[in-house]
Image 1 (cartoon, rainbow, N blue to C red):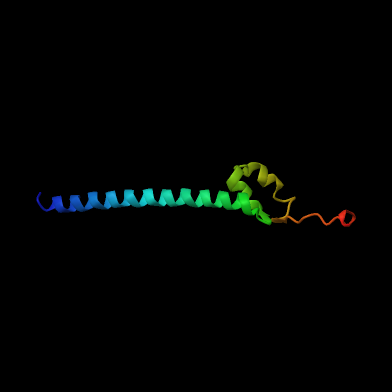
Image 2: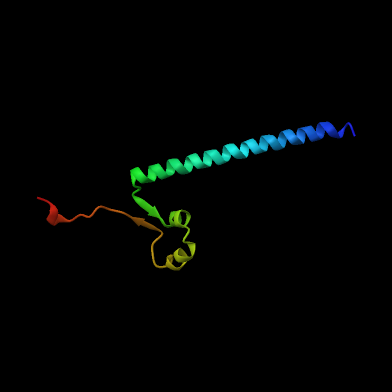
Amino acid sequence: MPTILPGLKKLKERRAHAKELRGQSNELHRCYQDMKAVDDRYNKPQTYHVDQFTHTNGDADKLQTLRGTIPQEIEIRPSSDSSARP
């Protein structure tokens, strides 16, 4: 019985360390998501990837039906209306 106690103590230490690492990982993930949201809000990405639509909106079923009709990447360009120039 006395030989089991050090093993149990190490197991408890490893579990506590793993729990701490999971907490840090979750915190880093939340920080990354916040930074990405701010970046997307203020920098307005020039290309919109279809796969990002699935992750942000969760409309995977609707996207699956549209996947064959739209290109994989849609480029956003400002309109070049020549009549608006002075």
